[in-house]
Length: 342
Image (cartoon, rainbow, N blue to C red; front, side, top):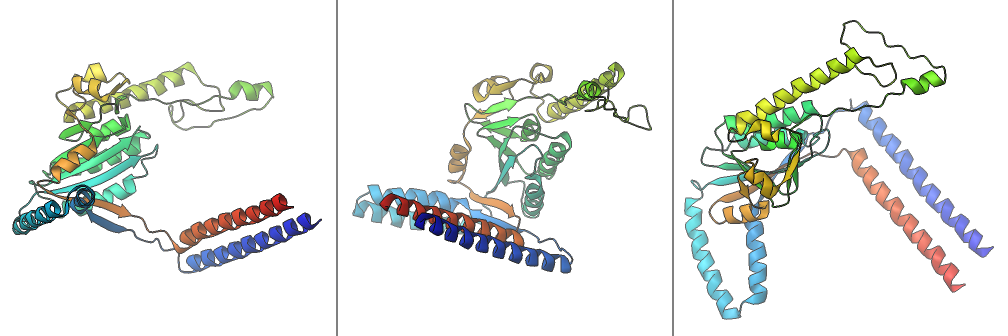
């Protein structure tokens, strides 16, 4: 009985916390709507990667080198940095972007602002490096994402694409724009093809005497449907649209990778990095870490990221969820302790 009483008390406390949090969230949402629901803008975050690589090296040096050797090395570095500062105005700048793509290319919202910011400052002697990871997705979304990288090429700024894991389908549509494509040995590349699939429940509905009607104005307004009866004419038109999109995809890749035998690689297949090099889908086998560490020796590296600011309700919701999780964890921990010691 004592255990049940403790358990009931724990549930009552938890319920009180949850109800209070929900009430506060509702009040915050109401306040937001009262202010017109104005969208919060993000902000551009810039981090100097040279300092990051320098910190890694110096931490290791402190642990490995003897005191006298370390002191001499630091003096040598101080002289080199002093000379470098005089050349910073003319030194090559490398702007590093990350694109982690999902099926909707959601990272596009950040990419467009990052590219816009960089093009206000980048010179032809500078370089943009995009660490790209994507297995592709929606045609229109990745078409727009690729267009953002075309802006860099059109501005005359060298563009390098680094693929550590995957750049396939829409991901490769973006990668092919790079003047130089680097891939890790086992990165997946290719999938230059188009796919569309959907279930059809017409026979299931027919079995249960359910009619489904589709009314259209225009012969090909609807070709294949999920619930209606699909026709051979509709299938042919749908396939024709896929072939048209595929030809556009092939033409886009061929425009930026003229060294490719496009008919050989535009089969929808994927290849690992080493094989992709032989097919000229990439220019070099290297990881992004290897490439950027080498560039840090002779250029200024800046990681550029446009961060979307979370609204107050979003931030509070995250904090509330964390608090609830911790409260539940502590409560269960106490109950288990009491059960064990009893």
